[in-house]
Amino acid sequence: MSIIDLRSDTVTKPTAAMRQAMAEAEVGDDVYGEDPTVNRLEKLAAEIVGKEAALFVPSGSMGNQLAIMTHCERGEKVVCDSLAHIYQDEMAAASVIAGVQIQPVANLHHCQGIADLMDNLRTDIPYSAPVKLICLENTLNRNGGTVMPPEQMAVVYRLAREGNIKVHLDGARIFNAAVALQREVTEFTCFTDTVMFCLSKGLGAPIGSLLAGPRSFIDKARYYRKLLGGGMRQVGVIAAAGIIALQNYKHLAEDHEKAQYLAKELSSVDGLVIDLAKVQTNMVLVKPEKISLQEFLHRLKAAGVLAGALDQETVRFVTHKDVSMAEIKKAVHIIKEILRK
Ligand code: TLP
Image 1 (cartoon, rainbow, N blue to C red):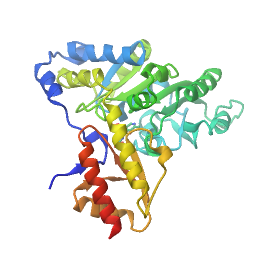
Image 2: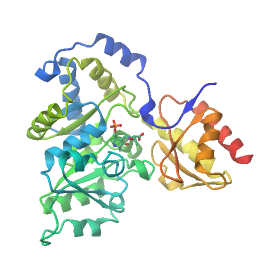
Image 3: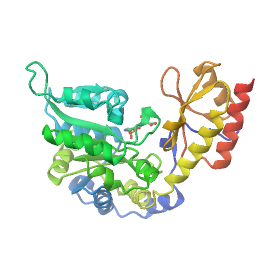
Image 4: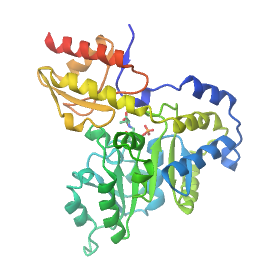
């Protein structure tokens, strides 16, 4: 039975062009800064997000954590949306590694949380730790991959500047945001001091993320990367795939079309609740009403469709380059059959 894997865009496999580039990559010891392919990737990455420098890191989580460590001192606060990956899905790493407190703010992503954000930025409370950093996430994974338009990022950035606070963007899927709004990536990243983005999600590279920002910041982050054991050696073999990924990201629009199709089809299915307004990129969140979430996932799997549980009641389908439109249509058929029975 062929499997239609809609658990995440992290399951994408390297393309033939990536594998060829990996096989042919020029390499050197990157801890000495001598891997020419990594150097090329870091330069390209910095350019594409409009920052001075970039650092290749093994994962998005490490990129975010390095950003927090580099921006903050122990005992400081980091404000983010209450759905943010750094708060919900990074193993409390910010407390363990950087020794900071994460302060979640509901609806920060929609700027409705601005009043709360202002409260958190107050400096006149003697018993509250100072806020050093605001982390935005675009697209916002746990909200169904919704996009925060640059204009809203600008509002947060302006507030942050007034409070002498830095802004970091978890841009794991910032290319999805840019493609969805048909804007340049720099139109988003100009409202952040630093940005992390992933090569190994919809862009299809096997491994790796980039952290970008001012050169002095990246130098310090490079030191911390080594401290955490993230210094890599002849890693040009992986960076080569990343370069191909970065040069060809417009195909993400196809993933968004597939998500639109899936969402529209599922919205007419009795027993599934879905908020179509949230389907803006490559994710579709549904709540099964007539069947338990575990039973739904179990039956899907038995029929060859893999999806993930976002929480106790929400199923997440993620479209990506390795699932074709024909397979999405097949998945729709399977889902309808399961709920009809
Ligand atoms: N997201 C994964 C899971 O960890 C939930 C997924 O399947 O979506 N930021 C955001 C917004 C992410 O969605 C992820 C991964 C990361 C950071 C971490 O990236 P990795 O997995 O490379 O550490």
